[in-house]
Length: 263
Image (tube, rainbow, N blue to C red; front, side, top):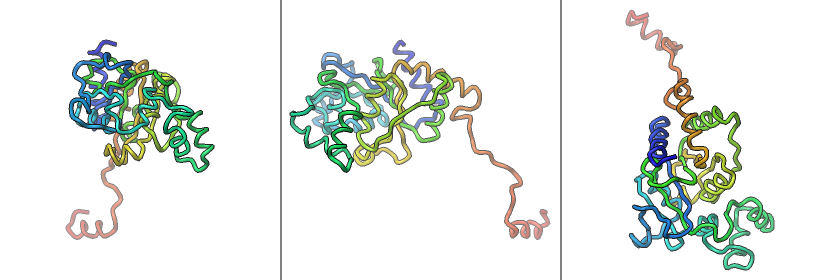
């Protein structure tokens, strides 16, 4: 896809779904030399450290374009997820973090991290670039759409309409940055993620929001599905609650109207 086509996808999603916030284009970067033009570096340019969910919030709400490398982060988990820091048996923090993943049994927690926690091999990437999809000057690896449940329903309808199969996800209550990014990239399929406590407390994510992840290989398919179901009147803008005239009234309504000679 060309950059113009990618930006058009962003506009289609925002308009068709009446999204409150912009879909986020995310590109993983091998080195700082790969940083797209126009990216703000939080620490270098502003003297600030951000959690990645806060960077996501600035992109989707205020339409910033941001690049995050290790010295920009204020939360360890996105760095572990993309492999930009060493994190394995024997490295600092490994035995402190892995038993703490909201699993009562420490051994089960360590096993969960090894078997289910989504991350790329150490050294895979150094950072990531983030931008509103409609404004991005780069091709994303994955697009994150923050949406409410009704908008998510429309996205699922569009995805199924084109693929012929339902979206399958695993759900966890923490580390939504890792869960929304890594499986979509490694498995090349859609993903639904619940924003975690950090997103709620630090990035001010609303209680009704979910995250729908779209790998780049699926973006054109999803847009075609959104446009198709919209044309059928089944898209987000086409669905509405039905309102009936002459609805059943409480008895005292009827008495009042009869008293006024209105039947």
